[in-house]
Image (tube, rainbow, N blue to C red):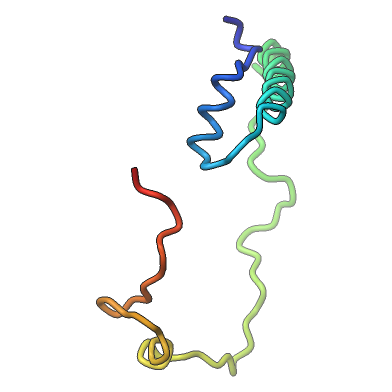
Amino acid sequence: MSTATISKEQVKKIAQLSNLALTEQEVEKFSEILSDTMKVVDVLKELDTENISETYQITGLTNVFQKSPDNTATLTQKEALQNAKEVIRGLFVTKAVFDRK
């Protein structure tokens, strides 16, 4: 199998791992789209990058954060948890996001 081909079975496996429910039409569509993407990647693999330096970011900016106002109101842990329905070891308890199989 060529690296430029993504089968329907591979799309279904990716969807399962991503916890996505796909219709057969979507599986077919994503198989084509991902295969096209892999063909582009194969073309890029052939490029000579021997004398090209790595680029990690292009702005030249580092550690840019919005400055917080000095009077930022915060809650203590006790205040934050006082109206929680359930607390365990000082943490909010919520319903599970992912099914455990």
